[in-house]
Structures are given as C-alpha cells and as structure tokens.
Image (cartoon, rainbow over all chains, first blue to last red; front, side, top):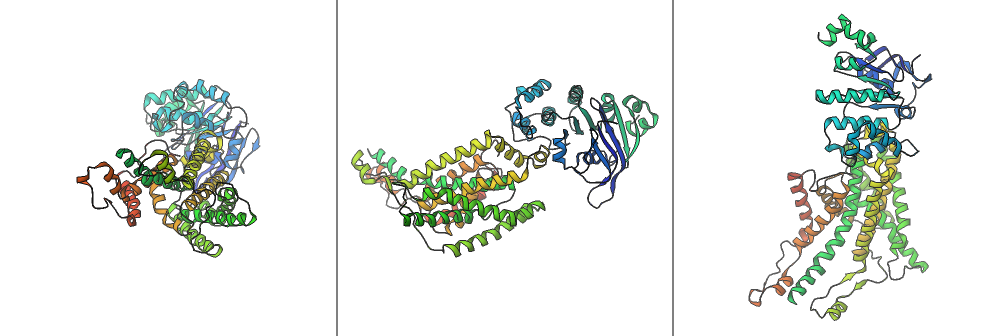
Length: 235
Length: 336
C-alpha cells in the first residue's frame, strides 16, 4: 500500500460528463510520479480530485492509510498535501519572503527555520527575499511557487505542469530542484507536457487516455515501450 | 514682509484646509480601496456608511453632554468614537451577513455586488433619516481654535492672521496615527499579510489555509474604523449634515482611483491630490497677489480659476483624466 493513493476515482465538473473514470494513482514517499497523456486526458482533473478541488462520484483518496475523500482542500493541506497550480501559483504583489510566510500560514511554530531550509534549497530566493515576486523571472517565480508549497513541510507535493512556459535551461534547473525536494522524502506527483524530460526524472509514470489508466510503469519502461513512444513521445 | 504675508494667506486659506479635507478624503478612499481590493466590489454605500457611523457619534455626544461628561478642551465626540465604531462594525457585519455574503458565496460578478451596494446605500439613508432626520447638526464642543488670527497677528506683527482650528489639528493628527497603525498592520502582521495575499490571489490564499471568513471579518472591522473616524472628523470640521456624505463619494472615489484602486497607499495620497486640486483651483488669489505684485499691477478681479460651485467638477475631471490616461492610478508600485 502506497503512502498517498487515489483509488478508482471517477469525477467530473458539476453535472457534466465524467472526466476521469476509475482512475488510480499512487505514490510513495521519496518517489516522483509523472502523470502523462494527451490533451484532455484528465491529467489535471485527476490531480485536482486528489486534492479535493473536485468531488468524487466514486472511488477514494487516502494518505498514510487514512481515508480523506470527504475533506476539503484546506483540510487536506493540514494533512500535509501541498499543491502548486499551473498558473497564478505565487502572490505576485507580495515579496518572496512574504510568499513563504503565507505558505506557512497554518504553522504555529517558529517558521524561520523552515524559511532557512527553503533558502538553502533555492539560494536565489534568499538573495531576492525582499523583492516583489511580480518582478522576478519565470524560473525564479516557479522556485517561489515551489518554496511556498514546501513551507508546510508537506509529505505530498503535487505539481501541475511546473515547466509550462519556461525556457529549456530553466526547465532543467527546475527538474533538478524537484529531485532535490524528492530527496527530502517527499512524495511528488506531477502533471507534465514535456513527457520525455518528465519521465527521465520520474520513478514511475502513468499515462492517462480519456480519463482512464492506459499504461503505467517505471520511467525507463515507459520510455522504451513502443506504443507509448509512438502515441505520446513523438518518436 | 509682503512675501511672508502672501505665504500666510496661502497657508491659511488653502494649505491647511486642503490638508484637513485631504485627510478626511484619504480615510474614505482607503475604505473604498480596501473593500474593492479584498471583497472585490465598488461600495456605493461608502458615503452613507460614513454618515451612519457619524450619526452615532452625534447622538452619543448629545447624550454625554446631557450627563455632563466632557473631554476638556477636546471635543466630546472623540470620546464617543469607540462606541460609534462598535455600532458601525455591527451594522456592516449585519449587512454583510444578510446581503453581501450571499452574492460573495455565489461568486457574483463585481458589477452585481456594486448594484447590491447601491441598494444598501438607499437602505442606510432611510435608516439615518428615521433615526436622526436630515437636518444640519453641530456637535463640536471644547476649544474651537488652537491659534486665532488676532493672536497670530499680535505674535508676529504681520497683517495677515493664521488660524488653526482645533478640528483641523485633530483631523490631521488622528489621520496620521490611524493610517500609520493600519499600514503597520497590513505590512508587518501575519493577519495583515494574509489579507494582502487574499487580495492578490484568492485561490492560492485558500490553498495556503487562509480562512476567507476571517479575512472578510477583519476587512469590515478596519473599514468600520476608517468610515466612522473619517465621518466624525468631517462632521466635526464642517457640521453633520447626513446626506452630504453621499456627495463626498465623488471625491472619495476619485481619490481611490487616482491612487490606483486596490492600493491603500495610493488612496491615502490620492485623498490629498484631490483636496489640493479642489482647493487650489477654486481659491480666489486676489489677496495673495496684492502682496506680491507692485501696486500698479494689482489685480482688480478675484483671480479665481473656478467658482467653488464647481468643486465637484474638479474631482470628476481628475477622475476622467486618470481613467483615460493612467487607468491603474498615478502611483506605481506595490498594491495592497
């Protein structure tokens, strides 16, 4: 049994059709799992369902054996599940440090130590700590977004297309940061468009098609699988 | 000597009144901008809410006076501020619970909330009419002047007197204290930072565990303090005419927009921009120039750019000009 599990989740928006059906995703601590698939496959929806932004019609979500299917997103945050949305994932009008402070809003203890840890992980944030985030570059903003999400010392980190719209150099740098986060024993789930790069740093991957699990396996297996290569990796 | 006299004329008739009026506008403008930035709608009940808070100060002042309680040389109304604020906040929270929260939960568009606030405005006006009526009331007591014109003339030997009314000094001092505390709160405390975060990016604020109900509550509490104190200061300085506050909404909104709506620093400075513009453009400079120009050039007209009847036209023009050329406000930099 994995640390964080979504079991046979079926969900959709409002009264609309089901976007994901019987979709299962699980991740253990210290593992990176990539969710891949064509546009409209329900990748982000699966992630939102696990976060509680969307009600499940059937299936369940559990963390460390506890069923959390009925908790609100805020309560799931308290359980140690952190989320970095694809867009608008920083407080652009606040300083870097204030962004981190808000990330730790639920913590009652001294947050300075956690902030120091984040600065160690992302040295650029220490340098820019009193700058308004809106004035930072795309790559730096993504680091702020990651840093904010890490402030609760999460056990699960969910990333929705962390590399969307950043340059290839920044993308490599971000992936390095994500690996560093993984090494702190965090379970990471990410939705990615850049399938090849994502699989190269992932321990496992899921390929969704029309809301259902189509393939799953280790990063290497998926990269080698001829069918996956043909349909999603463009080679 | 003439130069000094000219400076005193300007100070007495423009600078000091503009600083006072600007402070009163600034408090209202910060109120508008906070509600806009955090609750995301233009609150057309602003003026009447200020009037509502002031009404309690007036009634309580009369009550305190009947009990023989006074504040020495200071106006009794200052003693009533905490009670008036309490009533104001109570009223705002009631309105929010029964009116605004419904539209907020439904995620109605801002225009709809603005229309709803027009309804709240009419209801508030009606309540004021029922409780205190529309007539003009003075509730200022205590020492009226800090510096009288005659005293100043004796002290300095100048022809022109400088008058400082106690209400002017009180307005400016109270505004500085109140605004400093508010900016300290918004920038340095955890709750203040969470309010700015909520205003900046609501979804991410919710994901970070910020409680929207608490943010809304604190916003109304701050709004209640600003509205009541702003209203009382204006009422003390002029007099309490319940429906004048409605007219003041034009300069108040102009100040908030000049400063960049949603930006409290901008709203604060915007208040003074509007006040100085109104007063400088409607002041008759004849006496000022009599001191400065040689006798042969002495003006025989009033040298008034605009009649005081047009003072609202000035706010309105500034509003239009800013919206046309700098819709994000004239002050760059960080928002709430």
